[in-house]
Length: 181
Image 1 (cartoon, rainbow, N blue to C red):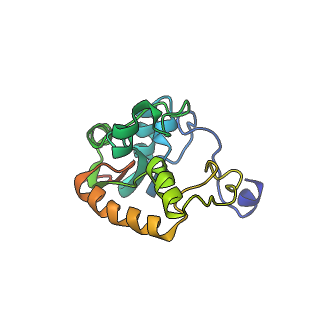
Image 2 (cartoon, rainbow, N blue to C red):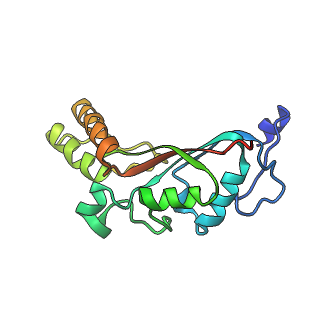
């Protein structure tokens, strides 16, 4: 933060829900990558994120899909069911939340097979040869995922279907703030 401020860039520290003196309605692009599921007050977080977007600006976000193939297969044993995930979303609930705040959905889709499947597939593709340990801090459990090229290609092909039919572990939504007439 110190180096950023030294460059003359204004920095706001704290949770989005707690900071009051933000430059509301002034950002052309606001992003939230896998944050919503970690917030204890998702409505308040969404209201503030939407309020940051300038008229005609964009909000792009991703979060977990509670209707994913992985959740349907693994249920509460899905690796994404963890204590720091307070909420789980589907496309309808996510759309409802953000359109109620006046944003317009431009694109929505699901993506990703998920590590629960990919780790299993990777083990088969590698015939039991495990990758050397994960990079500390990358959040990857021992053995990793997406390491065998064939598995990566397979997941990319599945993403085509997930975009059309749903079922991916992630939800992606692109929203736009209306321009006053």
